[in-house]
Image (tube, rainbow, N blue to C red; front, top):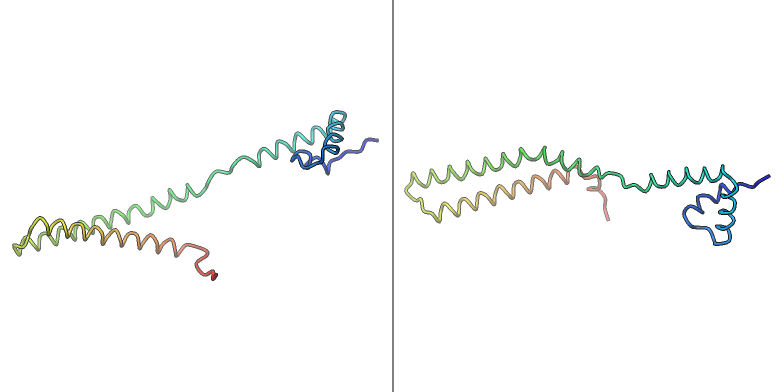
Length: 135
């Protein structure tokens, strides 16, 4: 009757056995096809477990970008409309200069960029699971 070292096959596969025990398992594997087959199955399973799992975060990042893209366009349109309204008001009052156009354009752009960033941070804060954890 042959002793099957099934409990040590996993340790052998991972290289955790001392040299003398590893040599004994190797000798047994040469003589026992059942244990050799079980070791091959364990090796295949171990290889399947080592394959990196696809990063699902990239999928959610894509979904998030598609959801927030309209918000960005709305902010861009609102900023452009505000800037155009300010330019028209200044033109109507005859106070229109190139410096004023540049300053109001940059100012309204920064304002709506800040609003967009604040909106993004708020959405991130609202959806995080760890916002209520105290250190």
